[in-house]
Image (cartoon, rainbow, N blue to C red):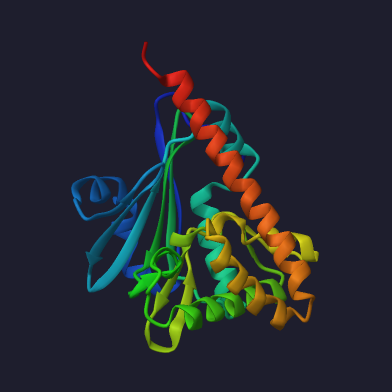
Length: 260
């Protein structure tokens, strides 16, 4: 049978639910209302995250911003949505032995035949801090041990041909006990081998101070069995370059938005 196209103004829903969480099917179908009614926001920027407790499960729900018209067409017909990529990437990471919150479901809502809103649901992963705190706080407890452990964690990712394409400070959660690390915000991941330059560039978005980045890269180079000085030179170059570009972009934005 030939599938029918959605009628104009008709809103349809598509979702995938992990079999272990079949008891949350109705919740998933009603996620738009459930999300709107909750005031437990833990992060709000381009996208919004909330914690919800449903049928004994502690969940984190990510609501993705409605794409512009061009991207609505792209995500409907040519690419997986960010919600679906988050779900699939989480499954793949766990299969590879990399810690990420357990994926429960992704849900997509379509309006006028195009992707409109989408959600990714994962099991809450309690943590004590992110990599941001040791990068910002000079006297963070056991700072050097944490930075070394983080370097080894990223080496493990790269060794398994995994690249977190948004390796920013808030996207690595850490438990104090055993310094267990967990990656989040995983809709942009790469699963292919990297050359050394690509590996070192991957650290740029940490926005780390030069001295902290040097500590991280030194520990990473030791695990990678590469020249420490050369590795630091490359990593620092791309980190500083990104900071300059971001700084210039902010200045240009301020210049053109400044009121007379």
